[in-house]
Length: 75
Image (cartoon, rainbow, N blue to C red):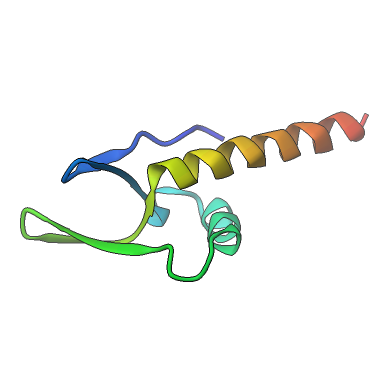
């Protein structure tokens, strides 16, 4: 899985779940606490399903470790 590049809006770094594959978006969403998804307005456009990049980055690292461990155990 390729790590997403954040969107910079109003001094914050964000990603949208819609940028991920359906499978990864579902896994990230199940990892998040309730209320973590944000709706952000930027230059007249509304960005829905946004997640703070730091949260996404933590999930990405955790998910990668799980995937690598699972692949290692398959041998």
